[in-house]
Image (cartoon, rainbow over all chains, first blue to last red; front, top):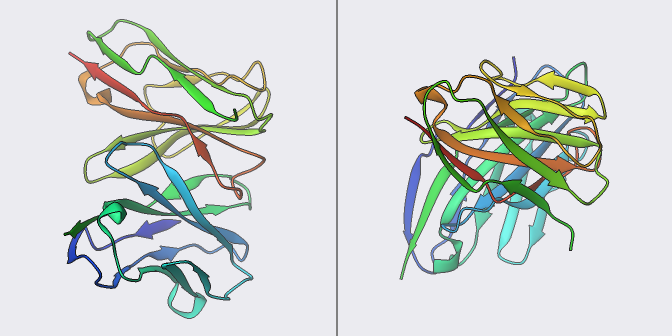
Length: 115
Length: 113
């Protein structure tokens, strides 16, 4: 079975703090893709990053960084020096390409950054 | 402008009255999908389509139908809506399969009384 777990339902931090959002996934497939999406209070869903199962290199984009570890089936997301505009719900997602082509989302983590 | 559009954005209806939520994309994407978002449950995939005339069930297909007669359109049909289908619905598309980033529509807030 394929599953994505985001155990942190809600996190509150003070502006400029660093915060890590956890994502743990389950799949038996060897080829799969992991994603992060952001849903700000306005409600739209915004793509942040995609990573395939063969690329464990960490990625940094400005204040955002992602740590992919196959050994622990995790794909964590860190925001450095958080800002109020980072307040949103963040979703981790998994897709596979063997047999079915489903897209599985976690339940999301609501991040509140306080000024 | 590249986009996914959904209509209507808001809908209040009554139990049993058939309804259709339209979804259209102008990016020539092959993969399209419908999700519902409920508090505490995240987004759950209802149906997806790999291409014209190719559709398949997601994780929560019961009570829904879809069709893909044209590449750009992927309507979601509720033949006999029930209150447990009250939810926020998102349509999405991606270039092909499910391994590309998805572009989401603005969402449709459905209330079934």
